[in-house]
Length: 100
Image (cartoon, rainbow, N blue to C red):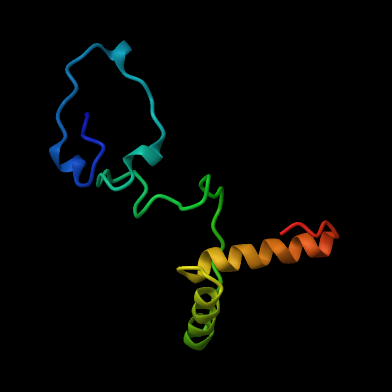
């Protein structure tokens, strides 16, 4: 099957009629947003590269609201990039590199 790499492109898929040797494998991330059932969902990551893994943290509603307020006060749109930067700065500080 082939389909357009655009939102809801999976719904416009068609059978591939070319030679099998003409096919080439592409990264699943290219299917993001097309609706392909095996592909990633949501927006593209804002970072330079996609994360290898995800970390989930349980938090109360009050904690999330406080994190979001603090993140926005520091110029972030959401708490996730702010939390990542704060955690990375803490690791750098603990290692003594001072890198932020």
